Length: 409
Image 1 (cartoon, rainbow, N blue to C red):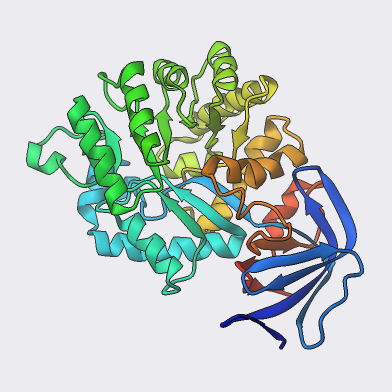
Image 2 (image 1 turned 180 degrees about the vertical axis):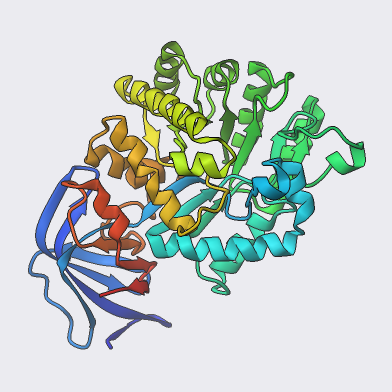
């Protein structure tokens, strides 16, 4: 094992021999490449690079190597169980204390990383900042998981996404941060920033009353003062319109967005994080087979319209249920099928899971590609996903920040 001295620091050198190296940005797959990794970062990439004596050599000559994947809409600390909580967020929160949710989140984080997701954006539903605690535990090496960007407590008008009508002190559960006036919005944003949020998540249509376009512009401006972007949960036509008109960084879901609003989103620089649920995930949420088929079909139709409109699309899943025989990571990968059904080509799907996601999350100078100077987040699969995107479901090698976290034969 070769160690190079950088002043007082020592960096392990690893050489990866890649049979093919995919660059999703340009859509190329180059044969017989060598990736030199020093410590946590990529030092050099190219054919025929000299491998330093004593370096650890990883032979992936029979595989395709590509950047680590992104899921831009996760809820690692949330698990709905319709048989126990009826799919109701308040009952889910009351059933599990923050400590248990963080532990479940740790298990989900490991499953996501082993599936090839080296970076995720966790958009709340984590109770009393369990997502922030999980992010810290991963960063400190206490548990294994992707690099996390976390939203903290979701900001919403009174009631959030709760459907249960009960006592006020019960409703004021940490699952959401209720804010109905400008002063309350200011405090909610600053509270999240104080506790370490990387992004501000708002609900624009959880109840019959909702934030106006001007309210959303106020939130965007205040979050922007601290360098944070705003992600807007929007599942109605009206909610999507207000969020897009205000110019949020990303609209989450946007299932009922019109063609006019999708065109406006492109004009305003709004990214769609599509979260198009497979039918088995919808059934786990409580839909019957016919309902799951109908809802899934409608979501794929919207995804197809967004792609046709030229709107930037970023991969996100919104998984917060368990499906027998699946991990949180394999469930997330199954969302690829919705993109395929929508007629989106493999290169664009890969871009939504790598370079486009990195730009939305603001980490493109650190992650999302295999280039010198970037962190060594990469995965390998037996086949070329530019030819067959289903190859991503067979990832057998995962490296995060220069450390191998999974290697299967």
